[in-house]
Image (cartoon, rainbow, N blue to C red; front, side, top):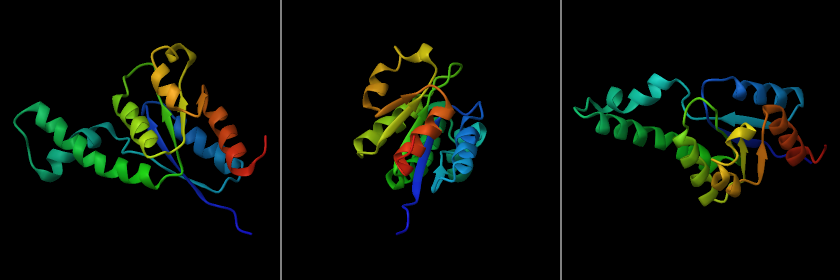
Length: 152
């Protein structure tokens, strides 16, 4: 009997190596999982719309065009994923991650949020939609191991 291969969408904060920590932990645990994510190069993500489709005079339309182009990728990846891990960091506001959490939830995708305890109050509604709230990438790997393998 072959084991299911899982796809996990990793959304949110781009200024630390949390994605690499989860990926390395899953690889060390020999989990049958692939990870996908939004574009994590900030400049590319901001400028993709105008770079591909043409300049905009207003910064509003510049950002709007980029957000729509990025949404093609994120919506497709979330819809194909088995679950989503949404990371919120201290330094920057990750409004796009909050959208990703809402979109994944609307599609019925299980959500794991990942953030420091100091953000618990600010993220209470997002955490309310999550099936698990982790504080470290290592906890996410343990959650994935349990969910996929059924082992603690």
